[in-house]
Image 1 (tube, one colour):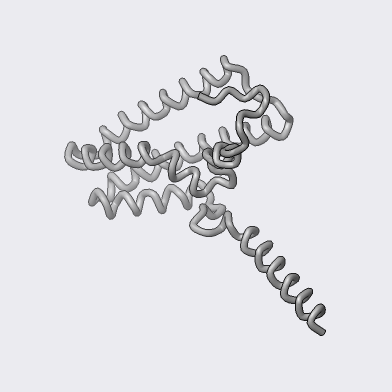
Image 2 (cartoon, helix red, strand yellow; image 1 turned 30 degrees about the vertical axis):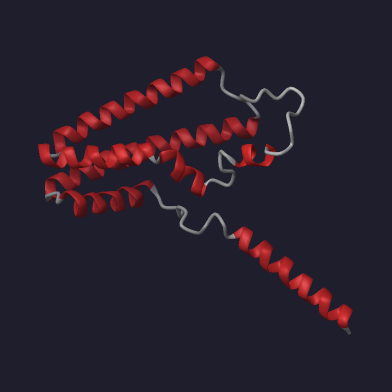
Length: 165
């Protein structure tokens, strides 16, 4: 009888652990919203924070929607490349990063045209803090935090071929 109860307790613990791990991505993570839905939510959030008028809301919505559509296309291309097992060359990585910075600059210039000077300053302040904490926030929702590998290697000594500085 004790063995049966022990086995049931172990089975219960294993099943709850599996269920909890399966839902890890859903806790606080992004849902599968369309770019239009995401743009609407972002526009509403900006309206609350920056007190946008109707014309500004429409312009910001279109800008955000276009940006999200580009991101979605880039994400699909990256997933397809990853599934094919192709890793980008250093030249391709340079092009990706360069085009990303160009898009960020264009987005900033467009926001400067849409917003008033005080709204733009507030928006810039918000975005600079967001970018500083970007890696921390991404690690929270990512399946494999960046420091995960480093923590697991602690205490193992210096494995062959591993240069630790």
